[in-house]
Image (tube, rainbow, N blue to C red; front, side, top):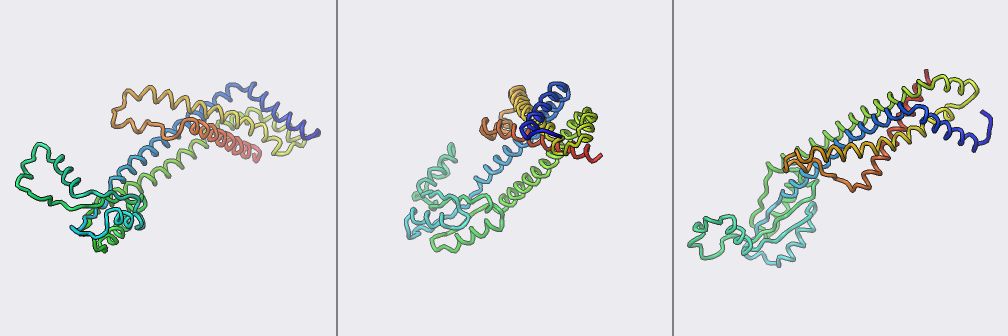
Length: 298
């Protein structure tokens, strides 16, 4: 193909624009297919992200409670600093004897008679300790507990081993399910898009064959389709955002309050729009390349 580089670029963009105008139906079909596919994939990402957040919040409730001896020696502030230096610990809250008794009275509201006759405060001071997410694993949590038990100022350490095991298993399941289903949806989306774009490529097979006959390179032939893929990807990403917003507004009122967390937007809206449009572009370009490679090999 004769001509300067600028002329070639002008032709490529002109060809892409002309193809979009002449094949409005195929362009719309591809954009809608990409939009619905991305909407389904995004909905799955929402559910997994929100579910993972909820599961992590359960992990926040997983606490190790270290009960102190009557005379632990160092001040609560010094003990807290020592606990926070322990590997795996991300937070520690001191609960004085007085605060523990106050919380017990609140829990026994209406049954205060149980505490009648108790002259002194029988409850020990304690530290409620939270660990990093990766330390919810039973074996690693047990290492923190062992370290606390070895301290001279600790009377007893309490934690729920069974709950930690179940929570760790649930976290592993959520992550494995997210990875497996996410890969499947991504592959299915790419398959649908590439085959939809292939229809457009097939409709222009005569034009492509003529270009090849006069010496056009594969890259030169692919370029207009890649540009079309970019435009269709952006349109598909914006359409997916519209589908998600409309769907959420339509069903939010029908969802019980305790399940509405699943429909919450887990990401900043501007960032999500950018990511969705970028994902559409990636899918559109990938679909165009896959379709063109198949066609040019035939």
